[in-house]
Image (cartoon, rainbow, N blue to C red; front, side, top):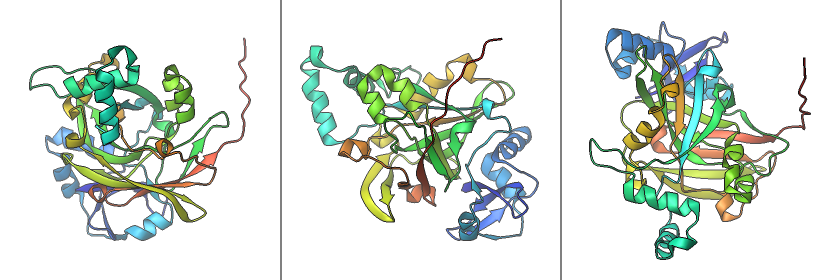
Length: 329
């Protein structure tokens, strides 16, 4: 089952089941997926069962909702400060050439970059046996819920950015329950938008390069993530495709297990605060930047996968310069 959040014709937040590519079945009595999840936890049932229990008789034209820009991100929080957006990198096996480079560097340990060392560590220890702890992945913070843009909305790139490029990824969505236990609600397609030029200047700039907007959705996939997921990432300029490439994800294509990535995120007490929402990106091996593409203001990113239903599409919008002033009182 897949769910969407959207605005009804009165502008009120709503939730619907995606019945098919053309039809939405709105839920009664819930205004958000977080509200639905809390109801499911209180009743001791799963999210799919809770959605079925709230399913109404009305049906909506999915295309109309999308064309009227009424789709919302597939997860939200009434207070964006309690919605944490994070991610992991160097988690996917990548291309044959990347693996070949890894093997070459493995024979010359002194010449390995930190990135290659981290990647090799994941390959060797990112999928531990049951009951064992695996190696830590690379980890980064993107921001709070205010950085997540809706499907179809512009992705803002700050005036000081050196680049603004897509990263087609899958993000897992979590709600921390009243006892402080993270509960995985599902998975969403995402564009983990980043500044790759800044990152390449010096790897210590990774933290800066990730403090950018991002996109999720529009659909939340409930249940387990398939072991193999395929999708396509495209960039449009003036209505024409200027770059297109297939990407893969899922555990079969990753050097870390989902369980290992989740452990190394939620092992920190500050990420187990009851009521908080988390969107955690799982990384990618496919970037237009790696193929020499330089994005421009007005370019459109489209990331699609049959596993996640409707594609997510957003336009790059470079922001005007904003002076930074610090006051003293």
